[in-house]
Length: 176
Image (tube, rainbow, N blue to C red; front, side, top):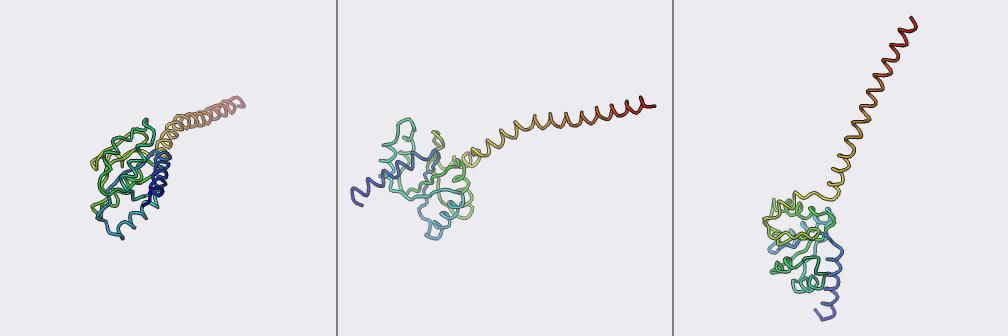
């Protein structure tokens, strides 16, 4: 790889890290080509971009990123074969990894960056799977907001039926 190709690759990775609030650093070595293609297919279905990267290029891209992002612990994990999964849904790669590992030993989670929080080690996979996505959280909030409103509407509707029934009975008695 020439110096200019390296600079281009570093810049592309730097942009990718800047654009994504969620990414996972994994080790998918020892997987066969067929297994990697299956993993790529699962990632594609979930909207995850999977890239095999050279650690030195990823380290340089992360080092050039803003210090406030807190990438330092991730840089320490960039050893050995590395695959990075970029996503817009925080728990999607964790779910893909968990599903894929029902049949295979890898990928192993090295680290995950979730909106300024860093998770280190494969033992964090379960916690990452259980993270709620932005869509799930919004759905819960909307459900909670709708619940009192629907109770109020229901009470008003049933109360309206009671009042109209009472008025009708009083009207009938008055006509007698």
